[in-house]
Structures are given as C-alpha cells and as structure tokens.
Length: 358
Image (cartoon, rainbow, N blue to C red; front, side):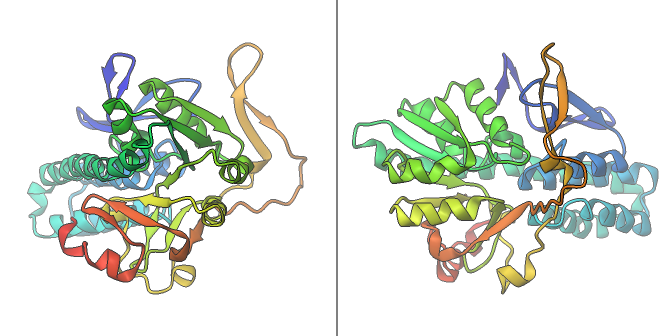
C-alpha cells in the first residue's frame, strides 16, 4: 500500500536486516525501523511494533534468518525458534511460520542455511500478499451483492486487519479496498478497539487510501446495528478452529452477538495459515494472552505541543484484567472468507477447502 507516494510493505528485507513500520508510533507518526538481530525481532513482536497474526508470522520467519547469521547449527535454530514462539501465544500464524521454516531448514546443510532461510522467509511474505489479494476478491463479491441495492454499503470492523496487520492488502480490509477501487460506495464504521486502540490504525489506513470511515467507541456498534446503519461486519482473526470458532481481538464476541440479534451478516476474513487444524476445543486449547495492566491504566496521544505523550488514566494500585482476545463460537458467524472462497463456519465448510489452501 502507499503512504504518500511511496509504496510500502509492512516488512521488507533491508540489506543485512529487515525494515518494519513501527506501529506503536501510529497514527501520530509514520516511522520505519531497522531490525538486525533475532532478539530485536522478538522485542518488536512482543512490544507490538509489529502486530497482526499474518505479519507476526512473516516477521518471525525473517527473525530466524537473522539468527542463523551468527550460528546456523541445529541448536541455534531451535533456540531462536523458541525465543520467537514465546513472544505472542494466541496468534497461530507465528507457530505455523516457525514450523514451516524449521521443516524447510532441517533439510539444508548448516553452511547453506542462511541464504535458504532468507529465501523461505521471502516466500512466506510474498505468499501472504497473494493470499490477501484472493481474500479481497472473494470478500468483494459479498459487498457487490449488497451494493446492488444502490445505496452506500456500511461495513463495521473491529481491531486492525488491514495492510499493517499483514505484509500487504490486509484480510478484513482487503475486500473494502477492492470495493472502493471499483467505484462501489462503501463506508466503514471503525471500532476504536480499546485498550490499544488498533482502530486508530484502521482509520489511518482507510483515510490514506481515501475510503470513507467513521471512528466509533467500542460500545457504539450494537446501537448502530439496531438502528439499521450496518450492512455487514467483517473482522480478521488470530486463530480459527476446524469447527469455525474464531479467536480475535477482545470485543469481537460482543459484536457477533449484536450482529446475530440484528440479523446482520458477520464474517471473519482469514488466510489458511490462521486455521489451526489441531484444535478440538476452542475454549480449552486456545491460549488467551493476558496483556499488561498498563495498557488499560495509560493511554497514548499528542500533548499540547503536538508531541507523543503517555498519560495515566487509572490510579496507582488499581486492579486490572486485560485479556487480549476472545472466542466467538461458530454459531454466531455467517461465514469465513478465505483465499479459496467464502465457506460456512462449520467443520464441513472448512474441510471443503482444506486441500485448496496453502
């Protein structure tokens, strides 16, 4: 996607390191950062300089390539993979990417591993873009169907599932970008997505692309659905089970409940690496990341001089719980938008595409 007149991916190779967009500075400042060691990559993932399930997987793959420059042995490969895997427990793309890299490199002699790791990481990044383009095309058909009524299509989304959360294009936002570029009148209700306010990233993205949007408080979505102001809900996901249960940013479940009550279609847009075929019990097996209490106690914004500032909004000692994700049961999900098509959020629906996805 473009920022100004410059095209960017969310991660790219930069000489002997990689470049990323530092998402902790957005939407106030667009800043790129160079990473040159596996430890720097691990910190970037844990601190959410990079975030979004597909992007985390791609960045971690590059992290292994960086680690092998210092030591390409089996033990060093295993240690680097363990370090990266420990950074974020919920998004399955991280585990998938590291397993793919290790399987690939296990058949490569240590002296050839560095360049092979770079090449495989690049393939993962390139494939992510193609998966997202395909998701966009399939999701576009849903928007076209609503647009035939001749009115603006109002889409509600939660968290950020755009190009910042992937290598490019995004998952939930990919159909919206394609619809806008096709000339379909589309407007997006953007949940702020507390406590980290990833909705501000979505608003920044949409505004940069020229897509009409309105930022709303998280608790406004139900009211808008009741009022007939939402035609469609599309979210991303950090993990989808074979039964169609969706694990996504905290607050997604409440939006799905409201959509079901209001008879509004609710879709999750995911590339196939986000489907965890090993899960039999979403609530018992998916780890829900408990994040720092400071994410709720503090907010980030601009001070009176236009500088990025961190402000406390809770008193010291205030008890806080901060689960980062929730699980939406399949019964509340109209369908899953994948690179192979839109399928029912059921075991049969997802099984029907298993052989046609990466």
